[in-house]
Length: 193
Image 1 (cartoon, one colour):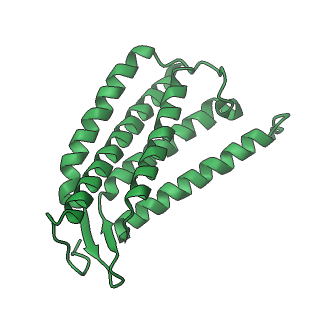
Image 2 (tube, helix red, strand yellow):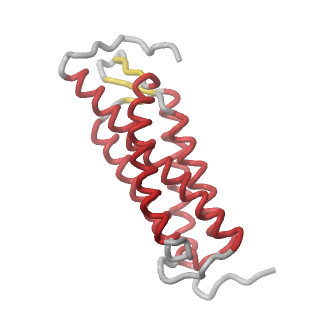
């Protein structure tokens, strides 16, 4: 049986925050499948939060031994994923007006699933190979071997997921603008899946 670190409070607080984030992303994934009331500010806020989380964990990788040369390909991947998602999401997102007259939407669930899976795996690698020091946000241990390759792989997947979320949100915002401008009509009932 291993003893807890001398000062376990920051570690426990961070674990609680991570569990909350994962629960919230899971809830948003479910809401995206089921359909939820649309608010443009909520779309922008969640996109910014997911972007910040992705940047935080991808950025921490460079303190753990990931070569800095991989930053440029990751940025290119994120931009490419955003463009792809922007085009893909148009066919997968549906808007409708509810009985209360509010605008609702759903769709693009696989994008949330990719992001969620990448985030869970990335956090799992940090916890398994670094331990509580992974959440100190200071100089940490340098990974080697399988842990380093696992971190690089999940960072690529996380960066891809962030790009997909940005593209999806951009498409949702554009469709919302078209609906508000009268260029797109929305049905009064949810469209079939």
